[in-house]
Amino acid sequence: DTGVSQDPRHKITKRGQNVTFRCDPISEHNRLYWYRQTLGQGPEFLTYFQNEAQLEKSRLLSDRFSAERPKGSFSTLEIQRTEQGDSAMYLCASSLDGTVNYGYTFGSGTRLTVV
Amino acid sequence: AQSVTQLDSQVPVFEEAPVELRCNYSSSVSVYLFWYVQYPNQGLQLLLKYLSGSTLVKGINGFEAEFNKSQTSFHLRKPSVHISDTAEYFCAVSEPGSARQLTFGSGTQLTVLP
Image 1 (cartoon, rainbow over the protein chains, first blue to last red):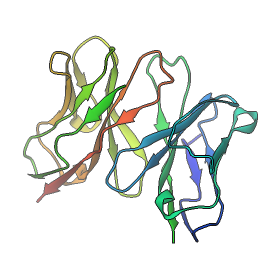
Image 2: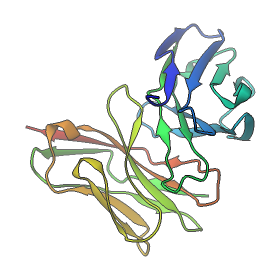
Image 3: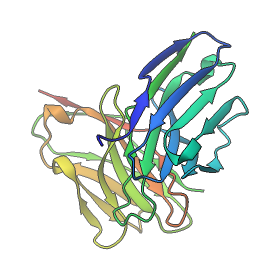
């Protein structure tokens, strides 16, 4: 297992279209997080899953955003009716609950450009 | 609510010189503290973390940081930088017992000049 994988790496879409991103966490990690990073800013928390349950969502996650993690493995983040303000890097991270060393591994991200 | 302030958005420094990247946080409870590095078009890589114990924390690539509770700071230092250290550095905080979500600062771009 080589780490957290995100697909696609880059996505260009027209305003109003729907997009979906995928994240494959480290296989034994039961927690999965989504963050959004806009240009010149640090990542901002969007939501997280423990196994298949979505336990917390940020106010940043408008009703156009939805995330799933069926079967507690990979996760998808969908944005409906994209807006130019959605242009950002979307980062996924995973961790193993109860890890003493507080492991938290990020993927390389999906860069979304809405034109 | 917790927050993180990185006082310098850009830090230029010559190769082999020492560097300090500043980070201050605010929180009403005890916290865990982290420094991450991000190279262009990449995700974040953990440099080091403070969870408890010794306030001087050593990380990868020769970096270290010191937790100062009275000043609510967690500054990152390296005694001698290399060109390859050029990257964006983020300080982050998390509250124990929370969902472990991280609150990040806005980042410091470290540029090492030849």
